[in-house]
Length: 278
Image (cartoon, rainbow, N blue to C red):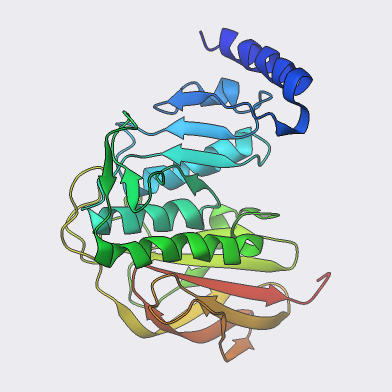
């Protein structure tokens, strides 16, 4: 079947283009991330993946995304990961990982509601008090698409290890009890998204997480750099006031960039700008 599907997708794409032109879109649902190796390079307009076990950890979402981006030559990635709206901690953490990875989450639909089940009419209503936070995540990725998705790629594993929060745990395979760095790179900048899993009571995005992350404030950050730094700023969708970019004072000594991150709740995005052409 994996051998047949790319040919089927390509034939469909050619037919859609012939009949619909630029208005046509071809997608194929890789259920359980199968057979993404075969279909991601095909002529679909985005890699659309419905996530199921054994991809249970929050970080499995990032691994699925970056793999599909690489296989698909950086075409957009859309995940369908069904989370009931009452599991607010789950969808905040899952969206932080998905959006920070430069991908998109198929979850919105009816007004004030979200998908919670593969049977789409079985949607769930978002509590009125939670709707502003839900909206902020989508406002955030639109405002900052130039440093999160469009024109960016996943950075190397070495760059994920280049950032440190001192004694705060950041390394590991699973997400629980650490701050996870997700790094994307553009021509003259790097985006370091910090997703906070400290003290949560579970690492499964599809099982109830009832204890949210412990916030960090005035956190010292150090980062190994190899190019001249011109600016450092951060923004977060967690703030209730606005999501504007905030410039951060910084210093660079012996190839180490240092600055203070004012706050990390669920997701804070740090952008390091480098001298053009360096």
